Image 1 (cartoon, rainbow, N blue to C red):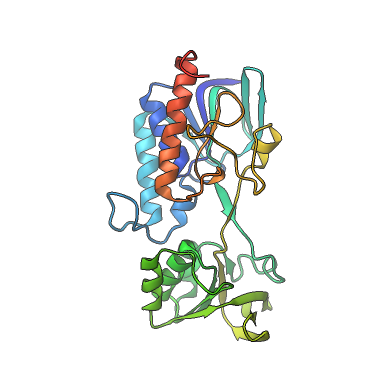
Image 2: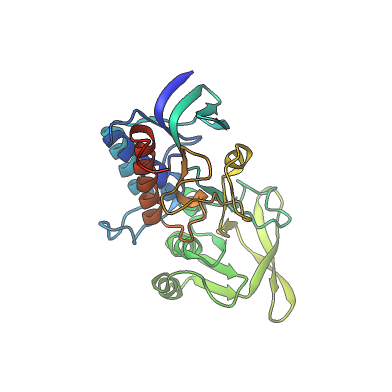
Length: 310
């Protein structure tokens, strides 16, 4: 078993920020990620609201986070999945598919995964026209007709990005208004090849070997119609990756988000959480970074100054 002062589960914005501050604080710090570090930040076609960068791709921003974290002195192990968390008494054990680690403190920054529409054809055509990442798969549909399902920031950013690749973009939202920032709404509405369909739901994704159409339900007219498309980009929100935390005894709310206090502490001593996996009401790169920093500063005090605060 390897012994580390700080083990961070997840290498997204929150996890990498935690890694930077952990290493700079002098803690022997390990960051584990089941994929390549960057999290959902790396999937963003463009980021325009992170301080200091008027405009930067998500992949580039994630890369800068990763480089900074490594140069600060944290150890990053990618493509290593955490399979179990065991918190009992004063012991905090993190088990991956490669090794077992005992930590002085643990920061859970496991993020979230894309919410599915849950309609017929979605699973069958995943990777064959159904995608959850516009920047990853958008270039495959140059000059084609695509559909984006969702009404939040990610949906509008994806629709805007795809408008520069696809010939036609349909933006479908089941409500009568968007949940996105006004600047993003104005941007999308200014795109001549983006067609917005409000109060409309995707009921089925159809095709043969690949996607070739969707069934749409108009909630206003109660009519269903079939629309030819080459791809469906699902941007319907996210679900927290909190199952392992819950199984270990960490409290979560009714939606599965880890409960934290203002100092990012969970109900388990020495265990903290940060980023999209927590019940913080704002899911943004900036807030994730702030939570990661707060979590590690509290973890440092827990490890080095146990008398500081109960």
